[in-house]
Structures are given as structure tokens and as C-alpha cells.
Amino acid sequence: MTLQEIVKSARDGMQKAVENTKKALHGIRSGKGSPALLDTVRVDAYGTQVPLVQVAMVSAPEPRMLVVQPFDKSLSQAIEKAIRDANLGLNPQSQGNLIRVPLPMLSEERRKELVKICGKLVEEGRVAVRQARTDAMARIKKGDKMPEDEKTRAEKDVQKHTDEATKQIEEQLKAKEAEILAV
Image (cartoon, rainbow, N blue to C red; front, side):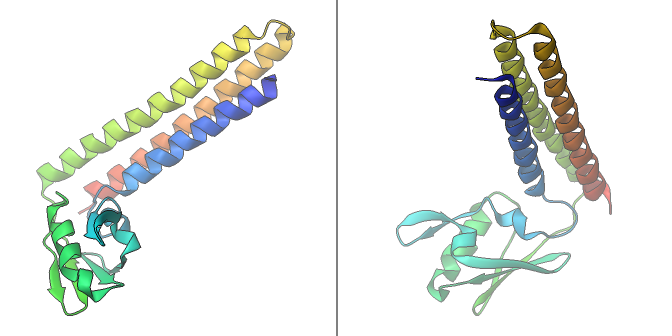
């Protein structure tokens, strides 16, 4: 494996960590509704567990309301039950072929709890970035037949990508914290 391939592999691993952190943070409920809030909900449909987005369309017409529109009306009760059982603290209400999911206000205590959860998710992202860096540095050091100055340059590139990925994750955390703490 060449030094360029090692650096590219490390950069790709770091970008995956950044994207995974972004997805994880996006699924945390803040003060306003987002269809991504229901991404983790799995519905019993057609004899198997499927993600909600495969059996219904989720939209957020108002900041404090999500609307779920099943593709198959016979699944309305299963979708409603899945949302209620998803441990998100939501109480869906069926209205014909629509399911309305009102989002309750977050207490100050719950907001602080959510910020702590975000911090844990971000730390997992940082760990993944550092792991990609460690793997790349180990592979660079193993390269016996490579010139030292190229190894040094590759190590600097890996460190630069590590710093960029960590900065992106930190920015995501700041944005999510501001969103959660905003009343």
C-alpha cells in the first residue's frame, strides 16, 4: 500500500466518523420537530420489522408537530403502536389516514440530559477519528522501503485530516447544543 493510499484510507475513515456523528446527532430531539426524529422507529409490517420511512412519509408541517402518512392505510395502527413503543416519549394520534405526532415541550432538565447524550455521541465520533489516525500512522511507520521525508509528509497529512475531522465534529456539537438549549 502506498503512502497516498494510506492517507486516503485514513481520510475516508475520518469522514465516515464525521457523517455517522452527524446522523446520530440529527436523530436527537431538540425543541423543534424533524422527520429524522422517527428514523429509528421500526414497524411490524408484512410479517417483518421495517424502518418507518419504508412504509410511510414523515413530514414536519409545524415546529411542534410531525405528520406520518402511511403508504398502506392498513398499517396505520402498527405505525402508531411502533411510534408509541419507540421510547421517544411521543403519543401519536390517528386521524383517518394521517397520524399526527405532537412534540411536547422539553423541560430544562431534559434539555441538559440531551446535551450530555450529544457529548457522548460526539466523543464516540472523536474516538473513531483517532482510531483511523492511529491505524494510518502505524501503517506509515511499517513502510520499510519508503523514504523518511515522504513518511513525515504523510504523517503531517494524516494529522491535518484528523484536525479537520475533529473540528467538524466539534462544530456539529456546538450547533446541536445551541438547538437543544434554545427555548
